[in-house]
Length: 446
Ligand SMILES: [Mn+2]
Image (cartoon, rainbow, N blue to C red; front, side, top):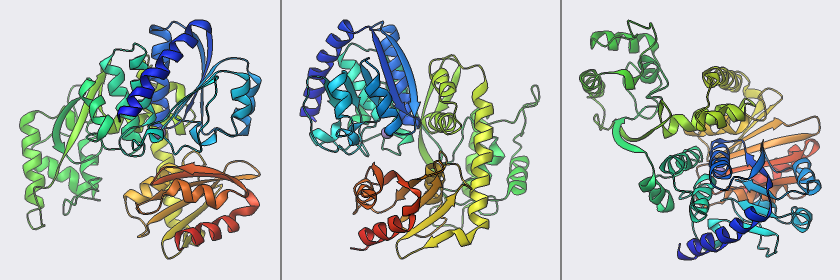
């Protein structure tokens, strides 16, 4: 930890010098919630603190096309949530331009170069998979360079949440203490600010509410019995959990616990909710993160950035509902196409190909893993990236094998891959699908 902080301080000094000598910058970031939060924090700094000009691009990964673009550009380039696993492929770019890599993925190897600033907690023995995300790394780095803004600390934790990290662990916890986030205990459901109350109850997947979980009609009836109105009478809009009065909330919580009275821990229905405002909009970390994810996956990353920069024009709700429809469609496809699902001893391979867009396949694997749709330790999604390549996403529930490392090894002869302990992604040539599966199986079972 100490060493990481030392690196942050030293490299932030170099970065500030670079910002003074170079006026125009290129910024690349990853299109998930962590990448979009990272980009927003970086842009906020470049705009308001260092006053540099920049151009931002959000990409799904640092593929050959992006690397060529960086090589061709003569401008200094910042890579957020990207780059640490591709140092050798970035060699030429590093020889040509100043490159700043701010990442938390497994680093490929060490490289020292006058043109390179490389910040990664994993290089200093800090766990980058659970205790700090790229947006956290960027926040801490820029804080050393003068950034001082609790909202940016809050945004840094959206990225951590999006990457499934622990808010109370390590550096995330330090960032939490510097943020504008308010913590409270509330019902352990998803969508306190985003979904109608009856939907939240219907989708209570983290624990069961007998008769209600999975049953919309009963959820509506339960609310009626408790005297909780579903809609706001003035606006006609669905009410969310956050819209309930504290009295209604109390009745709802007792109602849920009573329905669970025959279960083992009927009162085990709470979780810590981390909430904060951006402008007038209040959401919790989970909600902010799923909004950003939706924007990225639906090819609207700029909508996500505007949301974080308080410039949202309402587009995010359209993006969000379109995203939900696409996810629901993808999950339906999995249910209806069992012949495209390969089950092995430890893994399930969802061979979606063109049926699930490649930008959604990772999210689908996560949902599948969280909801235990298949009782397997490894969920692998396979989707077409283009006419000649496949995108592979892996989610794991096994902490003994490092998913990123085995995936990189499984594809090394015909593709690029990497990731973290429980999450991995790769792109391979189409004709090597069977070979990838047999390699991956061999590594899982060796
Ligand atoms: Mn990340």
